[in-house]
Amino acid sequence: MIVDLGIIAAKALLVLFMVLNLAGVLGWIERKGSALIQDRIGANRASVFGFAGLGLVNTLIADPIKFLTKEDFVPPGGDKLLHTLAPCLALFPPLVTFAVIPFGDVLMVGDRAINLQVANLNVGILYIFAMASLSVYGIVIGAWASDNKFALLGGVRGSAQMISYEIAMGLSIMGVLMVYGTLDLQEIARAQGSLLWGWLPVWGIFLQPVGFLLFFTAAIAETKRIPFDVPEAESELVAGYHVEYSGGKFLMFFAGEFAEIVTVAGITTTLFFGGWQVPFLMRDGFHFPWGGTLLLPHLAVVILQVGAFTLKVVFFCWLQILIRWSLPRFRYDQVMRLGWKMLLPLALANVAVTAVLIVGLQKVL
Amino acid sequence: MTGAEVLFFVLAALSTASSLLVIFQRNVVRSAMALVLTLFLIAVLFLTLEAPMVGVLQILVYAGAIMVLFLFVIMLLSPTLLERRQRFWWRFGSLTVFILLLEFVFLVSSTSRRGTQTASLSASFGSPELLAQTLFTEFVLPFEIASVLLLVAIIGAVVLAKREA
Picture 1 (cartoon, each protein chain N blue to C red):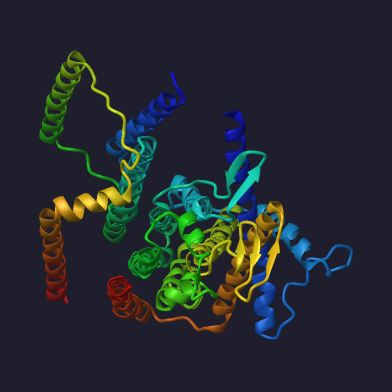
Picture 2 (picture 1 turned 90 degrees about the vertical axis):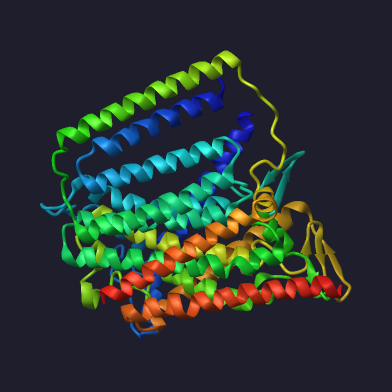
């Protein structure tokens, strides 16, 4: 009993620690990466004794110190309680979403099997969407409590955008659920380990390429980053919903955005890129389709799986940063048109085609 | 008391407190946020009752979608404080609450006299498979009627919005 509780607590803390730290590192990677893309040098001022070589470490320490020592300002006409609550509401959903994302298969310690997933819900995907739907409140409440017209416009834009893209996002993964036949994310990750025609792993990307493109587009729109950052739009709304935020509260909005990037990367990996699966790696080692086998001890297999999951997540974080610094911003009506008139019909068509294919293949086989 | 009972009483107390906050809070946005908290806590109660599907749908539909639209309207109309409630409605409300309370007491006392009936849950209780199976076989007609009703509502909303513009 106590041991079980301890294991659950350890898993929860580990995941929280990893997500928060990856979010912090991403703050630095985004600055350096944008500099790389725009042919600049980028963050190089946070040096210790004139040594800026450890830019990552220095920035990671300097950033929080800078934010936390700044004045925390609440507009006189604003609502102090809700103004404080909003950044918490923005940071909470992306952090708890990771609870249902499996980061490895089963780890055997003695005769105790530890499922490498914080919470094993049989409705895991619905839980993710439930938490995503709660992340609207951070923006809406922050915007309203700021008593600022720019902020309010950003909040109204943000809530309309997020509700619209939630629908497209929900429909875009319907195909994945139909193919694997479960809402449980660990089951989906396991199902992606089998092989098609003896050599192709049945990852979501191979079975649902259109679903992946639709989901990734809608998910980027949910994180409210360029090209979908109309709620912020600094050239129109100064900074939109968080224009009246400074210091630690702004840091929480900032961290929430990066935590959302990590979560989106985690969901994309789990649904479309095999989760913790390494191609041809079974529970006892590699079984190559060309005939060779390489048996590995259990611990090595688990480490490879967790490593593969981490690598995939980092890759998709980087892809999102690349997209953010490569594309211009949509106009607001374009964002709405893309969501309702392009993504939604395409997602519906994807569901219909997938259904026909599944039924057809069942009839044939 | 078992751990589950402690959890239930904590959640029940919190959700009662937050729902009281909904009606006693004068600030409309704070009142709406208290309602979101109430719905969220009730969803957690569903989770503890082995019904994760209902709990998650509660958050997804009520806390995540309907309440956002409430807030949307509040923000667009921006009423800061509600006016003092009129005496008639205050009396009407108190009377309704009193009657409902009597009914509730009667209900609780009559069930406890009969004794509680318990049966163990089937393993698939509350699972999405079971729900979908019941919905699409036994209750497929009501399901379709409800979806047509929603479609009518959507078309009606579009027609109204077009006329305004």
